[in-house]
Length: 213
Image (tube, rainbow, N blue to C red; front, side, top):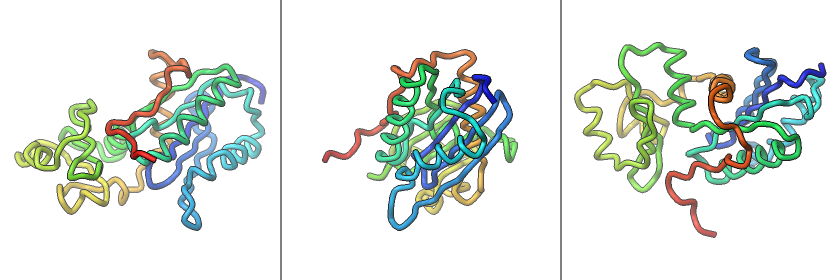
């Protein structure tokens, strides 16, 4: 395989690491890596990328696009994703695109379950706040009390994580086995056809500032 039509996507921002390889719109390989021996799963990012490329007989120079989850999520994971993508895209002189974890999770849920109501996604932001995705827009970090008011009328399908499921109700994406890697890839390819994919503009999505030190 020598054509330059391959897309590599990875996500180290959430509780698991997702890596996918696609040729045009076809998923060739999809991996999920969980934490090992108390190490961040992002520590296995480079070795897993090398493994996927080697097993699919694809060289890095055959890649045309890199996509990542740019946050919000683990600050360590966001940095790992963004730095790796920028370095690879610069060295290979190819495109790179980031997609929010909020959009990825929401899209995966919508495609899988076809909810009859609009989806409101709220992920734990600590400090009694949630990262909010509502009406297909990122609303920032919002106090949990405000989120509760938004969902009391029952007009939204509520999607959360394990931490907030007991507070807000709804469904935790972590229990649903959603195809997050595949969904990230589809979104990246879709956005690459209409948006700016300059790797220089790829930056971490820190809705709240990362911890100091």
